Image (cartoon, rainbow, N blue to C red):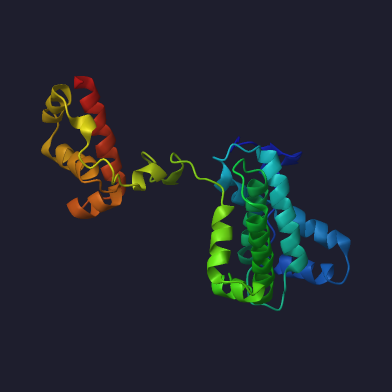
Length: 257
């Protein structure tokens, strides 16, 4: 996916307008009286919202044009169902609907197969969820969804979990301007606490070349199987610093192995 692509689906994203809150309200009032041009102006004026949402899915290998079109469907649903009487910003209401539409698209194109019955339960749960969001202008709980469907809460959870798209271990979850922190950095290793790969004269010699701080971090991370966040809390530095020190230490070791 080309994150910095300017033209998407024939739309020059660099020239997309921004509509003020007062203008938005005026357009909604006119649209709800049957004026189609107002709806079109609301759609075009909120395309930046779709653009901001699809940035969240830039590591899924999907074409940006496809995601943009799907996001626009979610935007149009949000515009058609938005209730002016509710004291909520349109973006607050629209973003979850745009995200939901994109996630449905990704689930439908997911190569991992899920049983038809479980998929049906999941889709019904998502429909109920959208209905409750529209009704209450907030995210419903699993209990509320299960109550509407008249099925056990656990069944809803299993169904929704089954259709979630997989996340790459190399998906960044935090970036402070330096090295990004990936999903894999949050996972502790509970099966290889003895770290057999550290056994061997060459690796032991490489460890001796490290500073005490670097050795301490590698010991906590790989011998004790702690996450970077746990290491950061123990030695009193940020997780981003732990990530940088860990990568630097491993880089130094490679030079001696």
